[in-house]
Length: 81
Image: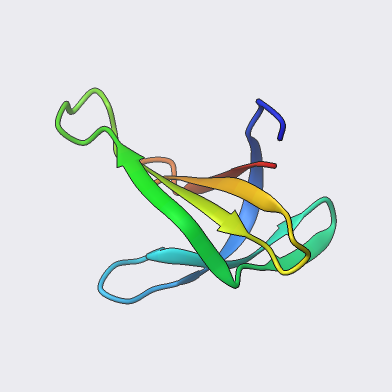
């Protein structure tokens, strides 16, 4: 797994909030589905200087384990695989 996050496009399930959780994403020119979210957590939010960032540890349909990070204040997704 790389130590660097790259910006990516993510398809999400949106329920009670937008971008609730990832269902698929495009990485290295390939669309990968997310059949399993292994873990999820967030940081920030209490201090206005530290915006909320959501993290999802996911398994992809090709067996990879990746970390997806959603930065709500930027409305951007990033990946580390």
